[in-house]
Length: 256
Length: 316
Image (cartoon, rainbow over all chains, first blue to last red; front, side, top):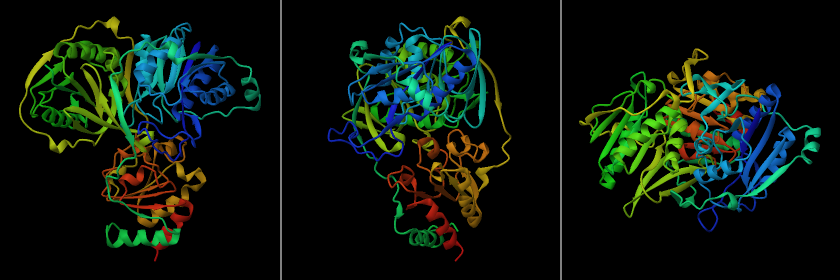
């Protein structure tokens, strides 16, 4: 089975973010980056399927030069090779434009299965996978907890709202977005890290894959949210803060 | 028509809990832009709302939800009536098909909108980036239709304008060959022994707790407050607390008298499950954590020092 896993590099989860002077991007200078956590679960699902079914796992990642680090980590965990779509640093890209670029990068691959995380922790559109399926003409299912492959079709377990689940059967090729947390993530082994150095990373320039279609949305500005509630924050030493809080809960909020 | 069309969700004839919020959004934005307001329901209907018309979309192949069936049927409805805006409640089902539907029109689906304004006659939508740490103002460009979804709670169902609407049945052209996925039965995995919705006080724990071995620290606080213990998703995924104690879009939605969020950053998926609480207390080491946006009281600090200090203060 030929499995493509689309991954993204995003700022580390605990990053303190600042908006840059353009008002359109965050300041990237002091940030550290990591794999988008939902995509790590998509990679894990891909690696497990390969172990069960045979075949190969190809990592697809669109991002600037710094994304090569995240790609190497995915190769170290066991992906066989990678396609790095090189984008300009800070380039604004909407999910539809990106899906067209990714589809072009995959045109010669003919994967059986395309996996991705259910959303990104940075832009959070939660739709790149679904849109990629539409652009590639593939059936899809989202928020997948488990995949069973048998021959030319798969059976997946979808998560619905309020604790409900559903099984869905679909033919291959197909695209799935994988729910986070359904399995344990593996760590790269020393051997894996060593092997990753010699694995193939095909580099493609995003600009050469793009048809200049007029975008259907524009970002006017980004900003830190104004607080909608007037919060009382206690940031003194723990004992003092705790005493202030308990006082407020007893005599102001009167909830205890 | 150049109106605004709200696409609503139902299951077994019962409207989704967010359906009326979507109608309210359409009514408000429609009024601000001077556009007629329409609704569409696949396999169900809607009454009692002040609307131009309700389109009831019916076909044997739409009895069970599939992204192919819904996208094809709704694309036909949209091409026929040509609304300027198509809006959805941001449900799991909408996440599954609306991006595909919008992409089939060559449009970006602007997902999970938290508020809006009209700027020189144009609709500007606000959505969250970086798990709620940053907001973005987004505008549509080019020709209609434009697609977007609204976050749970962004519009209030009790602001609904009651009234009447003409009802019109729409029968799309669909063939079984167009539907590539085969949905099977719905099921639940565990009976919900814990009903968090009945709890007056909830102490909820998130990633900040670091290890399963640390859960008892928070349990002590719950005991001291006479509270139920709950958690954000990662804690339940790790098996540190059972799934039935999960609060958020994939767990339970609660509105207790007091909700104490310990080491929870406040991702959207968690906030939608608890922001209706009367008093919200947040304890987090990151002063920029989105949980502080909704908190009435907050302590910025190391929970491993703060929680025992609160337990001690409660005993005094």
